[in-house]
Image 1 (cartoon, one colour):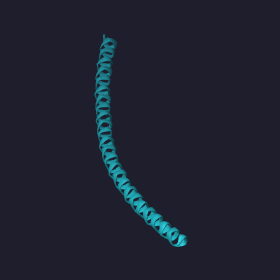
Image 2: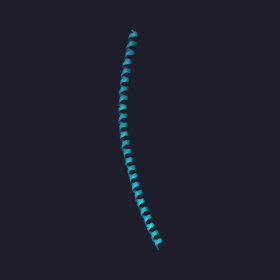
Image 3: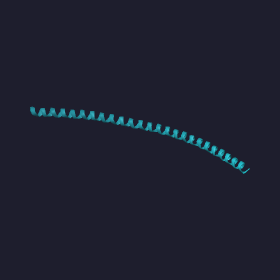
Image 4: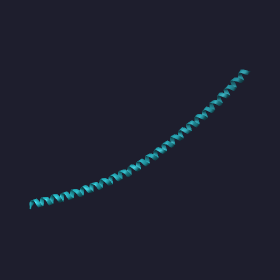
Length: 92
């Protein structure tokens, strides 16, 4: 009889262990789903942030190029004015 009770006890413990393993597997799956959702949100936010940074960089570069072109025109105009002044002074 003791063997019978021992076997029943072992079977009961194995059943409880199996239940705990099932619960653990469900919990792990739930955590993986949460982690996946968090990662998707993180990636989405990261992509949005990067898009904003790229837009700011493009704008900054465009404005820099425009300013360089304006400065080149100013210097060219100043150079031409100085050349005209030099020519005028030479002719006097």
